[in-house]
Length: 381
Image (cartoon, rainbow, N blue to C red):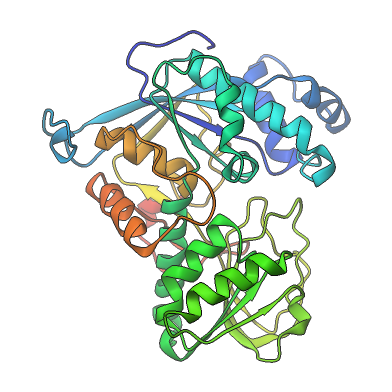
């Protein structure tokens, strides 16, 4: 699958967040005639696999090309792409592996260029590694017109939509809420802060870098927002009743500590931020940043339920969906690059593009299952 494909609209670069998911990917690549690899062999083999395309992807639109700036035919438009796995081992996401992982992302990006993709979306740690270092992509071979986007703007849009929907489901008044953002100075966290700060009573910002926290707080306070910052969650004097977890953690290890009983909590991390055994006083948790493609999604070979491990069909992370939406719109441009440039205006723009092609907020769910009543056809059997 490494050859250039005429008319390839997009490429998606990602990695698996667990060894179980990685094993399932290897099982499909090996074929049904081979038995699954034992766990220890999977862990031995995966670090030696170079980044490579693993499947073709086709995404459908509910509209035609007429929504795009370049015009086109009406009805049932599709975009063709490829998914490239960087094969970053799930236990190699810590800072000590950053050089190796950057090399894998660059190699995956080279695969996208060689495949002839017009636009490339970066998923998971691929996005985090590059968002503040886009100059690293300048060291790639001749791009031949290939454009890169982190996909973070659409992800922020789905996180914010999810918060508003969860508040409506729980009968909460968002404007009376105290919002806590963990990982507030990252691209996702700061984008969520800019979008949600005008909608809440108070904002609590948590991150490791105090100088970045101060800059973001100053920006929000200039708009009349009440802001408190801290590098440790336990330092907050007020209890949060709406929480967004968007920290770049190597594993699901976050313990929130003091939040309001019954707080609404959005885990938007990849891997997930929240520790599975964390005690959070009946918090209403949902997984955020996900969208659903109404026009259909097809993998060749079939990776359904493996590359998109969700309880609903055709659900994908927003970072990858941004590239698909832009491809359907025929807008091959670096919509999301760098860190700290996501604004409410940019979020509304990419949401409008996505909606035009039938890409909407996915039904809400968490580790225990769906959080809202859905049509039986929406659930994967």
